[in-house]
Length: 121
Image (cartoon, rainbow, N blue to C red):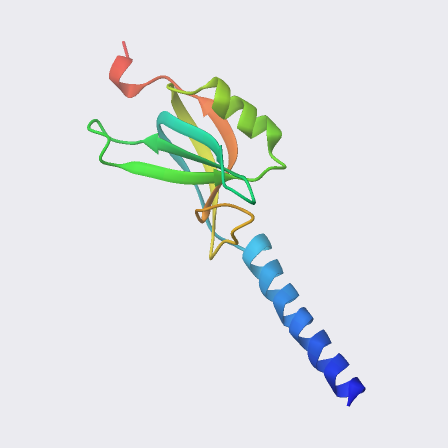
């Protein structure tokens, strides 16, 4: 009986581990989005995650929400520095997310400051 319970528990842990590895390491898509960085915040009660938004439209009707992993400190610092400016974001979209990673399926991997298309000469 103990052997059966041990194997069952091991099987459940292996299935969860495989699912987590698939969700975390296999991207659904990768891409680039540009817009005005309107928000970057460290939010949450028990588990804090980095969340942000860029506005991709003139009226603010097109909002792209994203998350940043805690390990990407350089990206977080650049987002804080570029608050309110036009930026280009490289992102990875995952199939799903876990609450300890972020609120969205879009995770930023690189940030670059860009010239706003409204101010071109």
